[in-house]
Structures are given as structure tokens and as C-alpha cells.
Image (cartoon, rainbow, N blue to C red; front, top):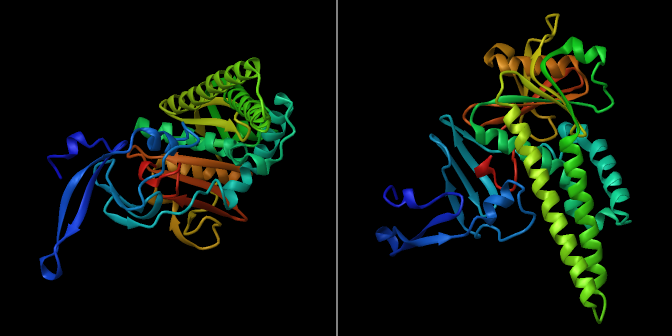
Length: 345
């Protein structure tokens, strides 16, 4: 296994192992390398919408020093990280208080994308459209985690103006960068996908298709790819901003306010963080703030005073945590799913 590992890029190559023999003589043997291609890796990072899934087999992956993840195909089972055995939670962006924070923004972006495209399509006809906003947020987290520099992303509601007094009281932004680039790029990609899919579906229903119609469809396909490339670039850009000391401050509708943010909350606040054991955050254990470093404590203080808000805290080892205020408690979600396969999160 050690000799094969250098040629087995975990992004695309699996070392296939099988059991042979009977009874006490049963053994494991390597019978080959499976090149699954880069599609799965790109799907996990939301750089592709569709492709071939993982084989329906027990998959043991190690993408970082001191870490193992075990899954059955694409379904995570258990993870070893930092000497601790963990059962990863599902995506907090699909269920629970963190998901509810982004819900209104997701709905508004979908409506705006439909208006831009001129396509009146029900959400049930395109599930990827309903998830586009949340996948973009996950892409930001994945790109930031891959940088291995750590960081914090603080999300507030878009209704907050850049000069809103309460925001200024909560965080000092060293580098102001008012930009709607991420939002505009995502909207363009959503609208282009809607338009392309709509034309494709109408042509599919015809018995005969003109050459000009096919040329128009190909042009829409190229437009869609260009817009999706721009959307991915915008997510990577935010990951780069997180490399600067301090937090990146954004809105739920993906408007950048600035980076290099320093939380400056006055007052003692709570001294307890509640660690969620499920996505809903209704099963939890308590821990003192002092059990965590400066970046974590600052993020906890921010979500405590700047309600409603969500913080994502990224460690240098690539770990991702989410935090928000639920009732009177500051709740944190560690080790949750990001992307399609948790081995990459």
C-alpha cells in the first residue's frame, strides 16, 4: 500500500482490495488500481453538477496527515481526525439553523435568476437551481480549506448597509471591498443554466429540429460554461481573501463587505459554547469559550452580538466549523458534510 500510494492520487485513483481464501486462511490482497477520473473530485467541490459516483464499496481515504475517512460509496460513515473518532454530521447548509439563515437569500436569488433568464420554471423541474446558492457557499468553504491557512467567514443579512452602526460596533474591517462580484457571477450562471435547459427541453420535445436551433443551443451551452467558470473563480477569490489575517465579511446574498475584519465586541457575553450533535442543534454538549483559540472565540462573540449571522471557522488543518446563535445560546457545528463527499471536506 505504501509503495502504491505515490501513484494513487486520492482525487482520482482508488487502490482496489479484495478478500480471498476461506475460514482462518482469509486474507486481503490488492487486485488493481481503479482510475475513476477527476469527475468525482470536481463534483465533490461543486465544479461539476453531474458525473459518475463513487463505486458502491467500502472506501477508506486519507487526504491529510493523521486523518482517515471511511465511507460506503458517497455516504460517509466515520472519520479519524486529530486522534479522535468522529461521526460526521450531514450538511448544516441543508438543514437546521444555519440553513434557515440562508433560506430567504436563496429564494430571492432564484427569483432573480428566473427573471433574468425569462424562463418561468418551477423549482421542482431543476433541483440544482434550488441548491446553487448553498453549493456556492460550500465551494467557498472548500477552496478556503484547501489553502491550508485557516480563516473565518462572517455572514450577515444583506439588508445591512455597509455603514450600519451595529455592524461597525461588532467588527472593524481593515480592507473594505464593497463588491457584488460573487452574487453577480452566481446569478449569471443560474440564469444561463435555466435558459440552456429550457431551450434543450423544448427541442427535445420536437420531432424535427432545424440546424439553426442546434447552433443556438450550442451557443447557450458555451455561455453556460463561461458563466459557471466565472462563478467558480469568484468562489476561489473569496478563499484567497481569507488568507489575510482577520475575517472576511459577506452578506447572505454574497455581497462582499470587506476582509481583514477584527471582531471588537465589548461586554463579557456568555462564557459557554454549545457543541451540536445533529444538524438541528437540539442535541448538544457545553464547553467553555477558553477551550478554543482566538479565531474561534472572536467568531463566537460576533454571532452572539450580531444576530442573525453565521460564522464559518477554518483551521489550518482544513477543518471547518459553523457557528450561529440559537435562542440564547451560541451553537457550533464541527465535522459536518461539505460537498458531495466528506473525505474532501
